[in-house]
Amino acid sequence: MSATTVKPTTTRPEDERLPIGSTIAYGLQHVLTMYGGIIAPPLVIGQAAGLKPDQIGVLIASCLFMGGVATLLQTLGVKFFGSQLPLVQGVSFAGVATMSAIVSQGGGLPAVFGSVIVASIIGLVIAPLFSQILRFFPPVVTGTVITTIGLTLLPVAANWVMGGNAKAPNYGSVANLGLAAVTFVIALVLSKVGSGTVSRLSILLAMVIGTVIALFTGQADFSKVGTGAIFALPTPFAFGPPTFNIASIISMFIVILVTLTETSADIIAVGEIVGTKVDRHRVANGLRADMISSAVAPVFGSFTQSAFAQNVGLVAITGIKSRFVVTAGGGILILLGLFPVVGRVVQAVPMPVLGGAGVILFATVAASGIRTLSAVSYKGNMNLIVVASSLGFGLLPVVSPNIYDKFPAWFITIFHSGISSAAIMAILLNVLFNHLKAGNAKDSSVFVAGTDRVLTTQEIRVLREGDRFENGKLIDSDGKEVPIEQDSAH
Image: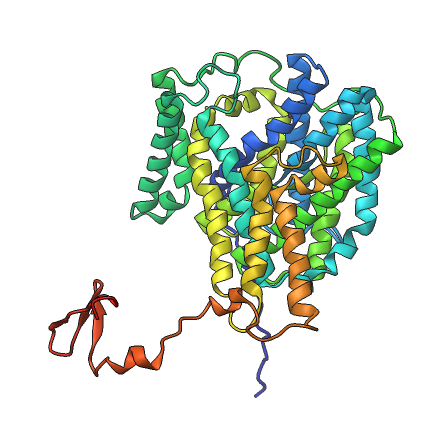
């Protein structure tokens, strides 16, 4: 009688497959979460280029289409391309200022597209080099970066809560904030209900209910949904063939470096949240997917592609780790790009509704980072100053967006992003204090000394067996309160 040996199969959390209905619903939730962010760059750049409303509509549709294609590549993956993680791709906001500057300097959209193509190809070549720095991303670094990602996104949510358009007369009105608050509360209430399915779909359901409420209060307008084409294929080089300018390419390459840094952080962050192994090969595959998508995007009228940090928060808050859910979201993005009428329906969702949900989502990213930092050891090392300095440096451009206005353009491009600022600082300080240990003295810093509680012998000598603290009072073993006198009285 022979025994058959069966090798155990290893199933990754991100490979879980859900029922088709749930997959589509959760995928739509991802799309709604990042929709405001993905349409913002083409709106800003299109306006800077002086495009007409219908041309800006084409630009938005192109960005939705390419975001979907890039998401499919990132989540499904082919050899050497795609991290196979639940990461939604879309137009990176990191390059908006640079691309607007290129447009305003007379190059127009063709110069933007040309610089994106060349810079992305260079980024594709150097992407594997970024995967070599994984050993410089321990929890003290990743936790700091994840926390910064969440805190950096909160101003975006605040802008949505106020209405999304600072020039609108109702921007910051009580009605807008009230609608956001209602959406926020609905999401919390639905998270509390006994049904696991409802709880996981709480963000999507809250946005749907919030939009219905907005219809009754006159804060949602679907009148323009029927205006325009129902179906339209993206046209290659619809805004003219690309042109190539050295200065524009150099500026855009700096943006690509920022994108590589941010995407590396997002890949590692979502890996932490999902609870799966992320090695240098997987990071390299994810970065290559980013860069090849960015290089192809200008052909169809789109810009640099990168992972959306807000969707990392959605993975954390829903607990849905399946990459195929995000794949479904990518398919929905492609449909939105092919059917402008569907995009107009989604675009009609009021910004305050998105903001109410965004507050929870983005704060969840920060909370995930704090959870990672809670597992870091702060005893006998300088980890606390690494975290403190990196968070402080990363939040400077968040709390004061004009802080670097007097600096050169290349410096602003890199450090205007709180995410890249925190990542760069955390990596450098981690290397300085935890890798280059020459000159380090144990407990040499007040930051180290402040991490442990210390009681003197004199302080504990007066305590007896059974003494305990309850609600700020010292209780002895018999249950009687022991009076505590101030030092001066004693």
